[in-house]
Length: 202
Image 1 (spheres, rainbow, N blue to C red):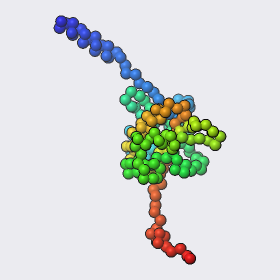
Image 2 (cartoon, one colour):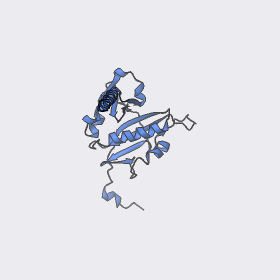
Image 3 (cartoon, rainbow, N blue to C red):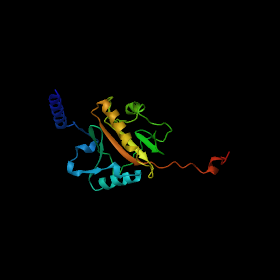
Image 4 (cartoon, helix red, strand yellow):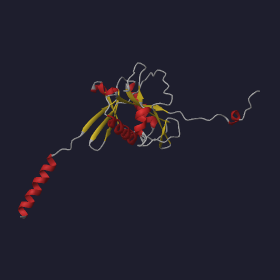
């Protein structure tokens, strides 16, 4: 009986070691269609501030390469190809698409609305979809999420935020591409006090 038990344990351990955990590789962003030899890896673990992240993306993009942020999840590898334009055309999102990281919290653009998992489904419905002027359907051309922060902001929230965004996007099972961009957020500077109390001429 004891020998049989030992034999069964041996078979189980041998089988367990031979079974490899299946790892899914997911790619996001328009850059995923570019040749692999143009990809340049961005490791978030080696970056501390938002300014370092932007500088790294700029260096890669402006050398005619494609930045590739790799996030290792439980049983998946998430490859994010962020949008970064070295010579961006004027574009004012007018409050759409943007999430702001400020003092360790995530807000909807420059509002005081704090973003969490419960709010993301609604944002993917009416905040992140992009429709060009010729699109008369209810299907967006693509989704765009602009993540913005000041230069000194710690990037510790970037990884969990990206994973939450990807998880919600995958629930949509949409054919529209998810594009993610990183922008600087300029701190709000209130007007001088004297202007606030300056009398207007009659």
